[in-house]
Image (cartoon, rainbow, N blue to C red; front, top):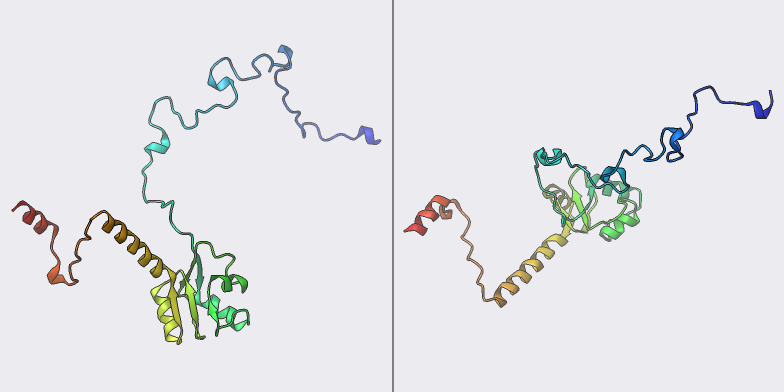
Length: 197
């Protein structure tokens, strides 16, 4: 046997169809595309069109809501922070923020902010500055003698102040909030009856 005699098994390799190479090939002239119309050309933009019938993607029920402006937060649990402190990657006595967590390898990136979750045990006294934290995480941090500064609360207060300033410039007075408590709640039916009277 010589190198030029080596062949693959019969039928193991199928040659590519070369279209538009004359009528003798069986795929000449229209190159297997049929004749005329949108589908015979490149760049067909039919997509999910079903000939006028209601398309499948419109027949399927839609549920939920995807907020395009929602923040993408990097979530981290308490046990992961404690693990980094025990390994000497995080300094518990210093302020711990998103940049410190990234530098310690606790999270890969800050994204739009850091959210602390309450899973795991925390022993160290921490001073956390994060976007937000769950109620369980806040309780655990404060129980260990630490504190949490939530940037979300400050941002929401600033946004509310901006809205109030804008409304005041337009001459609109914000509606007075009713005091909390069951005795001060007015049902929707009672409101409608009072409006009619």
